[in-house]
Image (cartoon, rainbow, N blue to C red; front, side, top):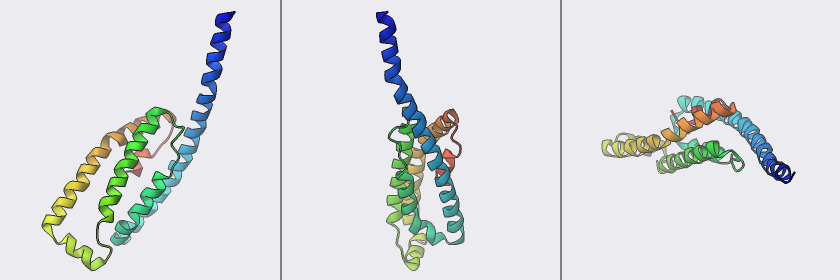
Length: 153
């Protein structure tokens, strides 16, 4: 009888955590769907106006960063945190670019600058890859589609 009571207590202690995790995953899934629409609109607008990409990337990253991941299961929470950290690094690098179109064009025509900027961005993209792969795997596990599509292309 004592073992049964202990087993029931252990089950009771685990059950709420599981319910909170399921609820957190459902909320996260909704947030990702909204972000997917945001990133699609951002990419479309950037194709029309490349300056928009430089001006708006930081704001997009802030929206992604604002997604609540506190109660997610560890196999989803950890790669999400790594993904967001990489995006923040990209936002900082892009934020250092001139806002003025003429100044930006000067930077684009500076081969040394573009080489250094390209290396920096490629390095961050490489750092992001394992997080995106883990997100994709966790997304498959939890029925969340489109996580890898949030990554810059």
